[in-house]
Amino acid sequence: MNLIQSRAWRAVARIATFVGLAALSACASPPAHFYTLGTDREPTRESVTVSPAFWIDMRVAKVPVSVARSQIVVQDDAARVRILEDERWASPLADEIRNALLAAATRPTGRPDTFQPGHAEDARTYQVSVDVQRFESWPGSHALIDVTWSVRKSNDSRTLTCRSIVSQPVSAGYDALVNGHRVAVRRIGTQIGDAVRELSASAIAPARVPAGTGGSALSCPALAG
Image 1: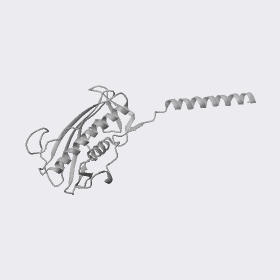
Image 2 (image 1 turned 90 degrees about the horizontal axis):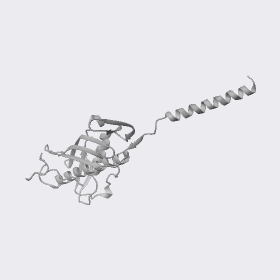
Image 3 (image 1 turned 90 degrees about the vertical axis):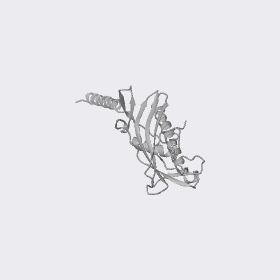
Image 4 (image 1 turned 120 degrees about the vertical axis):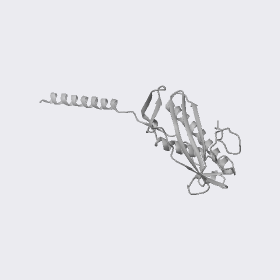
């Protein structure tokens, strides 16, 4: 092989390498985006009144199997969903919901109460269970959360059970969609906090009553706007 042929082969090899790298770059997957439902910091000892104190023991939320995955699942229509491989939750959705609800329920309100993660054996602890019936994501339309939740004082077998449904309008884009869920979860968490606060302040033990009924038993608090 003479010098000219050698140089020609090297040039061909360089071109082939460049083409191969370009093809690999074109085939590479786009980077995944990660989202969380929590933005507000947890209440600190300095940001809340220290007395009287009670605790919230919030269990991990139950979520529908169809959305219990790291990828965000969106609705194409009432009968079809789409799994977004590149749009993901930063942690398991059940944990995202639980942590966001707890943060909202324990946000300082300026009232004389203190919320902290609870211990089930403490008589001042209120145990909160959350069962998400629907968690629907409609891009450019709305984020919908349908939750059944219950509150029970640790030393009392009776339970206050409520249902909250929030449909939050959203604009186009996945950031807006996740923010819609964030707002919806925050509203429900605030409602749970109101329920615990009312139960703590009342001498009446919680009972199974529908929202809006009369009588001496506590009912489900109104959903915050």
